Length: 286
Image 1 (cartoon, rainbow, N blue to C red):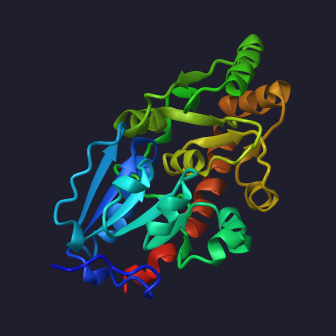
Image 2: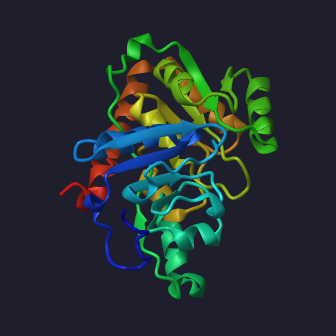
């Protein structure tokens, strides 16, 4: 039986393991599926998307590499795992991982500058939320939801949606339960996805943006706080601040299909060229 691999002992040789098991919280299941699609070209891969973390059963754990994204405590971790950070995770979970992947390059720059992490043999990798191919292809003429908002509700989001409703903008709101296959159905139907920040940090929700673009929806979003990311996407998405401006751009793109499809295609093509998964895990695919 193989033993637990020492931390910081050099780059992972993925061929040391019999299989890869991806554990993905259901809110990031599309990203888990894309990892499965890309890695299964070379390896034996299994994916589990969960809403509530199951009791861990680490079958053949010493011979398996786990990619966990996220939703576990370090005490429940398998022997060999990559932590794919899509949320904020405890330092203990970082310390025990073979590698830490993060969707945010900004996070990685903070880690690099932190004395907390300099003293630890942790390997970090930028793996952003990815554009992914959708099969069967999405047909714009079959989209029948004008504006979709989905995700965990907050007071900030409720207030903006209430303002828009008062101004005559109808938004199809899908709450916390819209994940996995149910979310895929909604995204196929959505012409526009409205991206509202959950809290005052105003972090641009790249998971939602990539899902929406991949499914052929135009993204209308409140601006994000991270300057570099905002600059990168400024002409690929439609940004608006305040309910009046949101109403203005939503009304424009609901009524003008040609403009909506053209603008959506700009974002879709940029995501396809710069946010496909393969280049970020290329050394695993050689």
